[in-house]
Length: 222
Image (cartoon, rainbow, N blue to C red; front, side, top):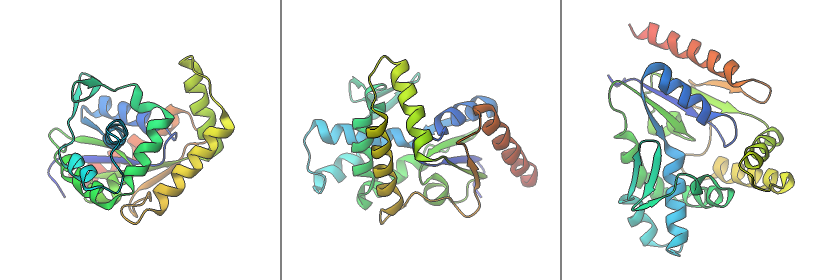
């Protein structure tokens, strides 16, 4: 096990990973890796540059992804993309590039290098199963597609945007299908992860279950 404690939180979109990871990062004073943002940035860049998904150029770009995380903002070269990468369109683009084995290999080292003291909270889909197999504590969040779609619609409406729940539900199911069935690093709970079904839990409920699990892992490490 690494001397630097890593806590992984995996699961599909809309299950509350981001909220939980932000709270865990603040609670433990650990760094925060949003691995999904890397794939979203890459998907956006590939789309902007009109690169064919099956091209060597996509792999090369992934190896040298010009992404920066500064003061809560995300930058693609000199373009601030914090908000745009959270759109449904970019989420779909991210899911498309994420199924390419060479892309995942290219981003692996970048993610592992984020494990720096005093510790790391890693948010993603394969953090516990692939990227940080020896993580101190692993969690996997899940929720049904309808609940996740309702959460997304509420989020979009709070931003003043229109949202079609039927369309969003379908997009979520299609994205889940791609993520769960890709040939490399499919979306799956690690065997040693705590699985939390969040459909009918509050953010506080999830946080309490998570820290109880994590603190028990810390105690066993001593």
